Amino acid sequence: MANVLDIQGLSKRYKSVQALDQLSISVPEGSIYGLLGPNGSGKTTTLGIVLDVINPTAGTFRWFGEAPSKSTKRRIGALLETPNFYPYLNGFQNLRITADIKQVPHAQIQHVLETVGLAHRQHNDFKGYSLGMKQRLAIGAALLGDPEVLVLDEPTNGLDPEGIAEVRELILNVAQQGKTILLASHLLDEVEKVCTHMAVLRAGKLKVEGPVQSIMATNDLVFINGGASLEQLVQIAQGLPLVAEARVLQQQVQLTLQQGASSSDLNRAFFEAGIALGQLNVRKKSLESQFMEIIKADTAV
Ligand SMILES: Nc1ncnc2c1ncn2[C@@H]1O[C@H](COP(=O)(O)OP(=O)(O)OP(=O)(O)O)[C@@H](O)[C@H]1O
Image 1 (spheres, helix red, strand yellow):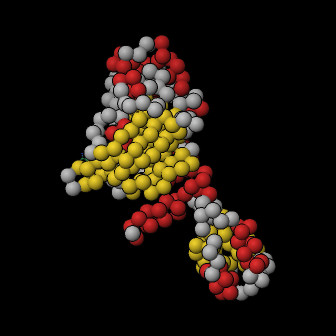
Image 2: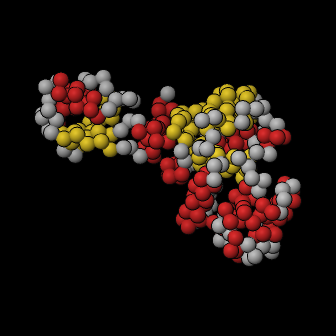
Image 3: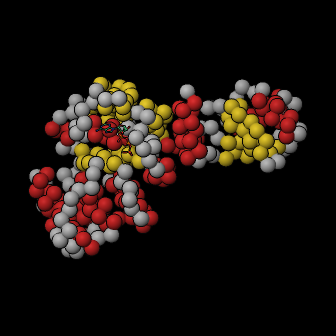
């Protein structure tokens, strides 16, 4: 899979604040790529730089394998801030103004309204739209010009649960049309539910990057018991190189495995230590607990 965006060693300094520090990430074509991090971690700065509204202090980026230019810009649709729609114009009329500004044929408006699920409400005034509808219209404005990539900064911020669900569904629909989506979010849940790939930023530094599935698949929690006392199991586990952490937790032993180690490796290691485990259960850690660990690991350094 080709990358639509390659970022190399990107840094941004605002006086005393290092907003971005040597960020290198790649966004694969067709992915929904989540830039995840707490407030102030550098997400908006990253998006601003790749959209050419913020100048980097150092580093480079390439869109579609090319240096950024007017022609690469035309292939990108972006929503960094909520656009100022006219409250007394309807959805269609508002998009027509955007289409004129972007010099996009009006013929595209209908298709965009259908994509964002507002075709049936296009003749209603913008002021009567729900928050979710307003945000969907804003995404529609970014889709005018039929861009290959859609860049969204915190697309569900400030929405009610219904609006959040609508926007998430829309993001998935747009991705199904073959577009790549790069979004910034501080919501783990959002990235977990919507994204195929992710990068975690903390204080401008990249902490982890990869497919969401593989990031979530690492460091599974394993629960064991039987074959020996809980204390003995912990002691043996702590001596095994494939175990990162072991502790007694409610009549079982909870283990975290080293990256790459599997539960069958663990079973074998116990067997070789003369213990036939009575029970072994694997529980995938939530992205949230992994995220907290990534953040903690950083502050501990
Ligand atoms: N124009 C600016 N002048 C000075 N500092 C800035 C400016 N823009 C951003 N910063 C600082 O750079 C750091 C990164 O900010 P950025 O907005 O990129 O983070 P973010 O992850 O998008 O956070 P948020 O979700 O709060 O917007 C923060 O410490 C922020 O205060």
